[in-house]
Image 1 (tube, rainbow, N blue to C red):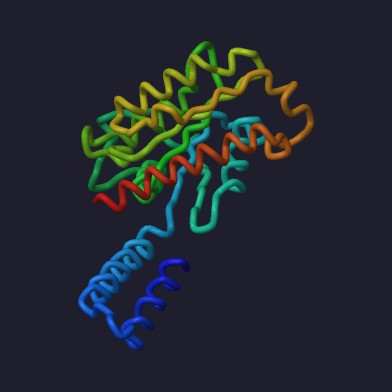
Image 2 (cartoon, helix red, strand yellow; image 1 turned 180 degrees about the vertical axis):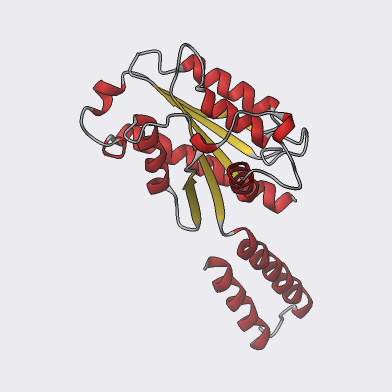
Length: 231
């Protein structure tokens, strides 16, 4: 809206120039604003894909993922992927680019269409769950050109323990980076003692947690938009 208003103002200046106006300069300003406006229209809608490492319907991590949806600013779509449990373990023998398995095609398409990814993970036996690692494996292939390649990635972890699933958090960041994602260095959140933090409430009702999730989404979106502008 601000770009539209500024463009209208400059156009009015051209139609009603001041006695000592500079039409050539104003023409250039109009061109600059028009280009800026066109770019903003193209990049206005940003999509963030959320992959959740817990398959349990009422898990805290899934609730955090849905909190991210609610924290999305205007013009941003946050999609929580459903169906990771249907994706088979990665096996090159069944990875057929010309005739992909439906579950694999669904995952890869969702990742390819997203501008950024948020990975939300619990901690199982000191690391990330197999279902999340498997998803990362699938979207990393073909190597160097997978759906995750070059895209901004942020990681959130949570656990009933005070450790905050930090081991899983670190392993998820490492796997996503090796897979080709651009893991944001200063954008992460590890939440421990979730029972004390939430009790029977939804994560969105915890002001501190909701604020941190909103900040992470905002950082992902800003980075994704920077990538789109520079592309």
